[in-house]
Amino acid sequence: MWTLFHKFGSPPWLYRLSGAILRWLLPITLLALVAGAVWGLLFTPPDFRQGNSYRIIYIHVPAAVVALAGYYVMAIAGAVSLIWRMKMADIAMRACAPIGAALTFVALVTGSIWGKPTWGTWWVWDARITSMLILFFLYLGVVALYEAYENKALAAKACAVLSLVGTVNIPIIYKSVDWWYSLHQPASIKFTGGSTIDPSMLYPLLFMISAFYCLFVCALLLNMRVEILEREQRTAWVRALATERGGS
Amino acid sequence: MYFESLSAVLQMDGHGTFVWSAYFITLGVIVSMIYVPRRREKRFLRQLGGQIRRSEGSNPPSARKEV
Image (cartoon, rainbow over all chains, first blue to last red; front, side, top):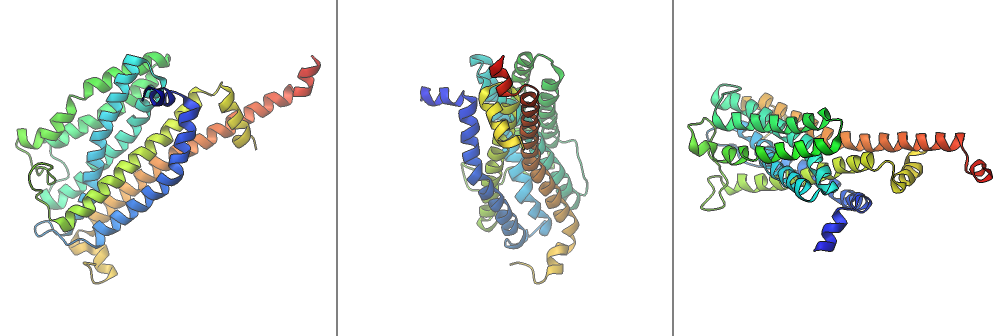
């Protein structure tokens, strides 16, 4: 276990491992995303109340679910970076922020587009939507904070603290539809008790959520690879790689 | 399939504009999530490789041996 933990701390090892993983995970993810979108768009029945506009659920919910999970990944990486000063955790935290921001942006925009035919408005300042907007700003805050510091060790510390403080927002997002009056519907997928969504709509949704998780992993590894190279550019292995691949 | 024709797929009973715009925006974001870091990685390796070649060109290994 500790050997694996130490291996994760090795930039060249993680760079090579991520390359091997991405070689098969990236094409599978892209295929799964296309298959899930086609399934949701063409092969599921329309909703009896919302008609076909509900098909936005197949991108809106997965993006929101993974954006929330991604924040925990970023906060845990931040905690590991603060406690053990592990370089790879710092890199993972930094790599999570733009991905999380992109997914939160997708959740907000698709939610807004879905809101127009369903609620008759693009935007309402209700608890769920506002807390998701705060999540978007938290992700952007981590990106901006890191860029604001000249001293990158200090930047990593500040970003880790911001990530950890921001975790307060995650349970608020989850429970917002129960705690406050909201236009936003409560969760349709429940792990305890029955889901309120028909299986013909549920299975493609679960499939798309899995595909978005794979997308998160792919994007995280891709971003981490760039971070690793930039930070390790003075090392012999990166210089050898640059001579081999980028010298032409 | 729940639609009878291509135009029915595009129109989605009047919700086509909402559904398709949401999907295309998501597509754009996903493509950028994959493409941007890949391009950054390639550009970084190319620039660093170029720097190394230039520095080796101004100070070739054979010349270094003689010093």
